[in-house]
Length: 314
Ligand code: HAM
Image (cartoon, rainbow, N blue to C red):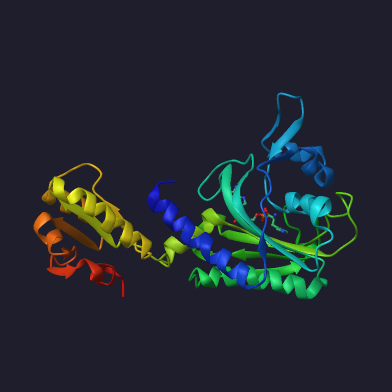
């Protein structure tokens, strides 16, 4: 993923993270690879065909995680059981499945995932669904369809025990299912107690495709200022100016090549900087800088003390 794709992915992911945190979910992180047994314990050996499974140099059977739920429940049983209930956890990251790749279906993809452990079943199921649909809304998606049923609707993963749901983004065509989840029981399978568990995952790749289709992705923050020292004598002061802009919380960058002013303005334009800050020796002596608004080409001189305010995005 290049910078533009990553900006879109982070936009979508951050909407989930912000909403999950605001719902009282807290983040956990589990390893990318797990003991193969974690996935065969419930599903049996047939699941291996759908995994990236391999032996490590010590002869151990391992698998790249195909999802987060089993890993999080293993972690719950080993380390998190004494936490206050309900325990609300979320994770984001890449997962791996040995599938036939096609548009929207990959062998390595990313999920955003949430689990509730130890809540009463129905309110917890509703809370999970609220976060799932809320995430779609927070991304700005309008075309959202959730289908709710019971395990008789059967979903692909075989650990569900109660309410199940799937969330579609109808604008995606064949691979329109952006998320799914429901109530399940894995804690007991991993040696823990009988306790209610519910959760869901949304496919990040598909969410981004929907958001692109519905044009909801906000452009990333632009660089506020690109600092252009003019002449040898301005170099040192330019770094001070750069540092003070960064310390003021602004996005600021500086010429690292030693280009002339006009090449530097071309570069500032190409990277989408909002302002160029031109520092000539004469201006610096007077404690001033020339601020050029890149969109209009309008230039004005400001006192260095007022520079941060002059380039602040208001
Ligand atoms: P899942 O339905 O297998 O559920 O996957 C959730 C979402 O991941 C799917 O709806 C889809 O958007 C995305 N996805 C699945 N496979 C692919 C693929 N090959 N390429 C791109 N995206 C894909 C789970 O993973 C459960 N762990 C959800 C859960 C959490 N249930 C309880 N807690």
